[in-house]
Length: 371
Ligand code: 9MR
Image 1 (tube, rainbow, N blue to C red):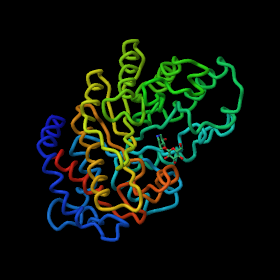
Image 2: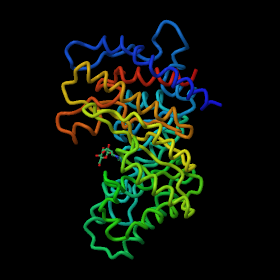
Image 3: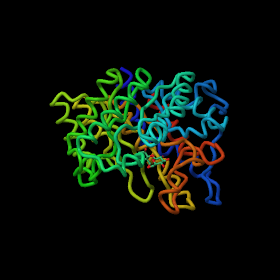
Image 4: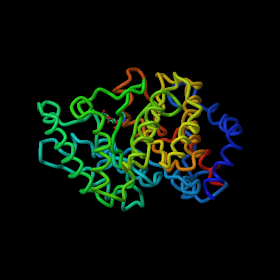
């Protein structure tokens, strides 16, 4: 029932939404440094009580979870950061703390300190945790990448990794990103350590091992540039269809949603995610951010707001899209400037923890979906 309501409402409201947003965008500061800072959530004169205006309250009414990636150091050291994580979001993803190089920097020596802190924080704040990520080509410890292992040894190492980490968090993880970014843009499998040594079967193995270790966790495949229908998302679709046919326990597909205002936002997200609905798996937007070439002008800020809404609406329009996660909420800790020279301001809060117009845009979509 909730889904039907949110679908109907978002479809009806989508066109009017842009017009509704215009005043916020027009109010952007003329210096092109930052978009306008809307009044803090909950400070409007009319309407619900402040607590009911948070993203998490709005998302709850809309029938989805709203999450953020969490920087472990900032969570531990910056009260303002931690307060916003707790107040605005009802799911969290460790940005780096559950990755292989973080949890097993030396072979056989595990360190879950930072990840455990986030899991405890989440529990205390009524949040679910997305586990991220078990099998990836990146952020592997050097003992693993520089070791010259045979295929059998590497398979044992991967098995050991999954059967150590997943049980450590058993019962505490809502959705696990089991395999991350295994495809190229053209839909072929990425030439990674895993594919080279183990062949394509490593993907099914990873899902089977993760499921054995925590049967209740919802197991996801996660990737970027699979927002709309394209060669890569079709390859993911074919993989999921084939794994499900073989009885491999895969229950979700994460569309990361890293966008850039320089390229058009894909408007067929719901068409794409709908294909996965039909396969019987959940979907989620798992790493949303929208980067801008700096300095940002008003048109780019407006494009950013629309791109965030395009991603969120794609999820809201999909019956089994369960959550929308932003990849960090503040520009203060974004990965973007370190990776894309000259680009930034990709998040929904600025570096001083002021909500940006993208925050307002998301709020408005959630509010409409929850009515
Ligand atoms: O945000 C993460 C950043 O702090 C790391 O340095 C980087 C290393 O590759 O990974 C970033 O997160 C990535 C995520 O785990 C998977 N999808 C792409 C994200 C951005 O690179």
